[in-house]
Image (cartoon, rainbow, N blue to C red; front, side):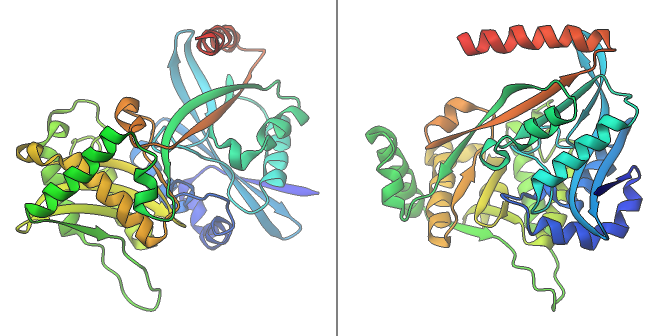
Length: 367
């Protein structure tokens, strides 16, 4: 019989750091967002007015899986609701249980949640990757009395990398293929060189992340449209600058940081800030010098990045969900995430949301 340990204080997770790391290494399609480093950073900057609920599933004396959850208040068209969900907040594309036994982890966690008092209105697990989940979450929730409703959540645009760059280009339209080749050729003729900062961490030697390089990327971002953005999600924005910096440091120290830059005469003219793990990249932010538009730095950057990633043996670049029109030109695979909702029958707002979601997703499916 599995036992569930619930941890509600971020400080108390230090005691499970080695266990978390052991389980992370067994997690299918694991990302930086499933590390304890990410959760600690996320909680430091965005944990206010939220309740941490990390469920550790233990069989006999061994912890076999971790399900990080958070309770937070969200504003909806039905009014404010208390939501139990994953601690991702759309920073990444996918999330799920940590460890090599996701079925047992989800089953035990859902049984535990069904037996404990419920302060939430909506049990809403988002960013589920169907390719990895394979119906486990739906079955675990249903087995323990959660009347789960599945929805398609978000679409992310990705590039599955073939064996060589020419094979990738052959999948693009003739016009766009010519644009990529022309942009790379013009950049090389102008003396632009690429550099890839992907630190390899050796536990036997001290390591210091390249903060000077990161600072130069932030300065470049301030000179682009990102400097005037009010979204609060850019690496140069006052509200998120320190958060992105800490993510850069933590990911670098783990060997999960990928920073591509373009330079001309030692001048930084473009950057692409990504997280990486086991050959899978997730694009976070890009920027380029406004005065270099004639060199098509955006096309050059991504074209060179794809070519270099293929040479390195990477298997996928996830471009994310934003700006689909621009990303569809590059993408050869769409990644759909899933959302599974249980609506508390004791909450009026939850029941209003239930019907609202049904109408919304029914209309989207019809369209």
